[in-house]
Amino acid sequence: MSAETMSVFSPALAARFDLLVEKYPLRRSALVPMLLYAQDEIGYLSDAVISEIAHRIGITELDVRNVATYYSMLRFKPVGRYNIQVCTNISCMLRGAYDLFDRFQEELNIGNKGVTPDKIFSLEEVECIGACCWAPAIQVNYDFHDELKPELVPGLLDGYRGRALAESEAKNA
Image (cartoon, rainbow, N blue to C red; front, side, top):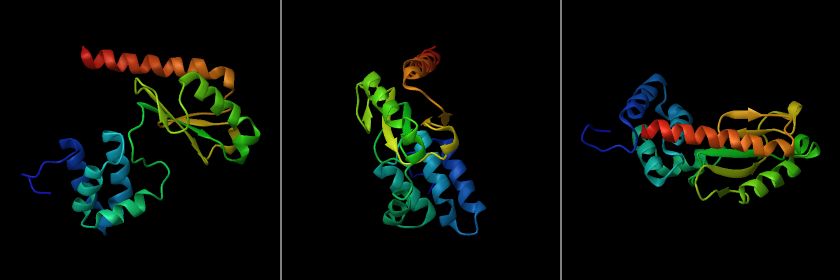
């Protein structure tokens, strides 16, 4: 991107992308890391994000979308500050994942792929998060919680609400 072109990314992330594409023998190899970093900063893969990444790597937007749609951890719609992914694959299912998922829906008053009105939480059922030995398991952003029971859901949510409040207060201070 030229210096006069406006980026959808922060200057720090734009600089990181410039370094990433130079690090790999093929610029395209930087695609998945760039998508993950972009999602962390923006919250999801918007049309503008996809367009800029395609331009930075020198591939088409369709190529970016083809790769991005393969990975379940990449999102094309905004999610809550804390995205709760409940694994319902066989190991988790057999150990109560659907009871857990139901409890999250009840506590948050949203369904699958829903976002709470305050945008603090989103909820989704996912196929596998790789924690079969500790089922049932969930992932909240990058935090894993395993061997979780439905009765622990309210306390878990309270903890994340507290973090969101503290972050908001720190930002406004």
